[in-house]
Amino acid sequence: MKISIITVVYNGERYIKDCIDSVIHQSYQDIEYIIIDGCSTDSTLQTITKYKRYITHFVSERDNGLYDAINKGIKIATGEVVGILNADDTLVSKDVIQEIANAFNNDEEIQAIYGDLNYINPIKNTIVRKWRSYRAGAKDIEKGWMPAHPTLYIKTDLFRKYGHYALDMGTAADYDLILRYFHTHNIKATYLSMLMVSMRIGGVSNKNFASIWRAMEMDYKALKRNKIPNALLVLVKKKLNKFSQFC
Image (cartoon, rainbow, N blue to C red; front, top):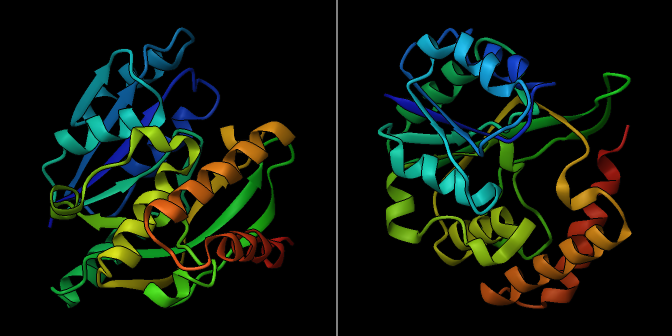
């Protein structure tokens, strides 16, 4: 089983090396590694060039934001499964992709797999949040649950069936896709009880109060678009669920 991993980056010179290293040192060999760069102006391209023999596809061109770049990567991908690893993030061990492949191979009906994630303070390099998930389904979506997007590995054919990331959803494009797949289409997904990804905090949706408010507005839009019952209550529960993750 070929697994495609997509890394999107723009001016990510600080962490892109760690991200790439975590992919190329995986024990699983059948990985298609795709890097989509948004015309970085720092030393990102020099770092990527050093690793070019490990990178299956590399594109550097202007895009319309993170999710447009991810969609480009998905359209390039030839693997049976696609996962997203952002430039600030790392796979926590060399066996993560092997375990994901084993889970898919053990049950051909599985359409998606997700696991656990740690949020890392990039200055202190300490864990500040632990996102521990569980086996869940469509009804759990209505309770404010969602899988950790950086741990989500999806069968590639689902993108053709159910669509890519919606570019009009802003920072909620991943939430919108999860609602569409897990609730509207009730895909068969399974939880892999293991830590998969370390994610550095400081994303675009969490910079200040204005961006946090905007992110909530877009989450609500995603809930309404996907016809989730009691959308406002679900949004509140989604936010409250985060409090249990803090160390």
